[in-house]
Image (cartoon, rainbow, N blue to C red):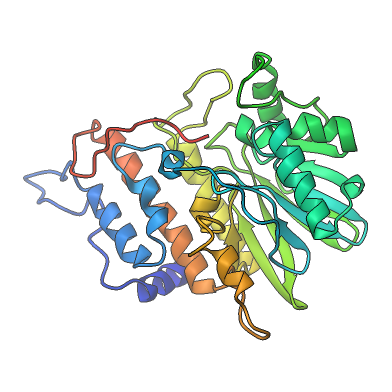
Length: 355
């Protein structure tokens, strides 16, 4: 993809890559219909021992990554960087960015109860003032990310931002029924456009509209500091690769297809490289290992840090491997679909979709 990136990724892997898909078979035999499995092999090499959870996107046929979360538990509200705080569970994430002029909240969990208990409760435990929430960014229009937004909108009145096309998707959803897990959609407020910058106080976030997981998923580059040292985080806004090459899905669960997802991911990866990203976070904590079980995850490692220790969220080689694993899994899923979705040894009986 990019020569320097690939070289770094290969150096980080524990062996040589398998041949690229399509390279197998002689001219007389034609291409190997199972060549997409080479991408799975490459992803496994990149994952080594520390990034194995990222291989969930290489399961063929696709699986529901969220199903790997057993008992859902709350994470301890945690200051991760000088201005970035984690407020979520082991299933879905929310993040708070504290600036010199107020707070930017990213995503709102499943429903009002979680938003009040985990986000606002976390603010209070951390000494943050929820009335200073000025903006609420919704990475995409799935209800496990916007389910608590209306409660926050009605109670604390932040401006709410999401891409226009995902606002339109959300508007078609029926109102939730009493007892439903997910909360109602917020009232439409501000649209996010590609390349838009949001500045609040001393912090500027750059947004990119990256169609794929939904028609208008938003990813971002987020500057942070760790004990005053600057870093740049890459935040891919919607994981889980679509199941078809082109757009598919139903009301509230539309996607833009594998080909759009692939194009968006390649573009965003390049943007991060050009900007000097050296770490990453996600909106599902089992993907970036922010919080898993409180025993072997980044929040635990962060809590155990001694003065001068590096942040467990920052390591450029790990960031590059994480992104390259995603690229290999996208290639694998595309190849599997183009091959007619043959049965493979990596098949799983669970073919549900991730929210």
